[in-house]
Image 1 (cartoon, rainbow, N blue to C red):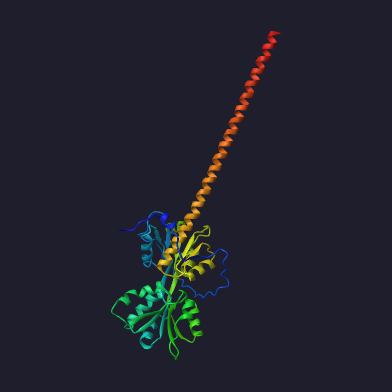
Image 2 (image 1 turned 180 degrees about the vertical axis):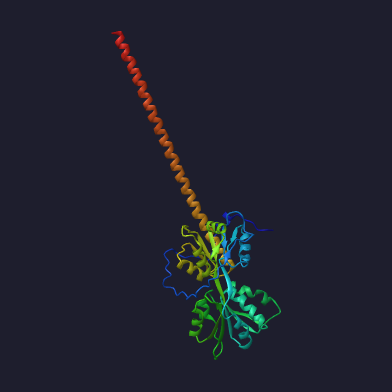
Length: 359
């Protein structure tokens, strides 16, 4: 049986393990990674043809074609999405080295910290004829890109580690260091990824080889009608700091945008807060399920605020209506008083005339 429910009923149900960054939170003391200069290449974003014509509840912002799972998960909950890709992945400077390195060098660990890094790695691993590798992933969302390989007959790839908390810092602190010899780690990463993983592992005695295998470019232009729709949606769903920065740059200066941001994880949430966004939600553990929960929590809060605003609006309308009625009554009383005075004056004049005639 197909599962259906109203958005209102969903938003009234409790949602566990969602964190709202407080407006008083200061990120100035946090170690944010150095960022590479972005390419001047411009990308233009368009809404998905499958987007509903009605007002969207959520704007999904991953690269074109990579939003399907989130859109499907939200569609099952009767939540309408508008697809507005804010980033595009491009080839990194070290991509061509990856497959040859996998052929020539045996690594104790391959560290993968994002779905895109996983997809890029898989292509190079297949090109290297599927050598035996042991993978450490940052969380369930990243691990999911290896699902089909793990189900296949090919048994040379093993997901052998995931940290207790899905962050790069915790991964670097918890990755097992086996044996007496130096443990060699291959870290295929984004150009824009920070240095905390290789620095954390190096401090623990690992020998880390980092390859910048891909880059993330921001969308710099969005169709005006699509952007107008996106700005009206109550929730923006983002999966990377790059997407947050792209969105901030797209908001017109005349627009006072104060909607909610549902982030895939803490790293993106902290970047959003650092850029001045206030209503920021994220799950304790990154991944599709946690992301959906964050979106639901953001929608629930939006509905609560909107409901409160409607109540206040009704109160204001009621007060104005009451004031109008009082003013109308006062005007009526003044008119009646004026007319009564005129009538009494006429009666008085008639009485005076009658007395004079009798005299």
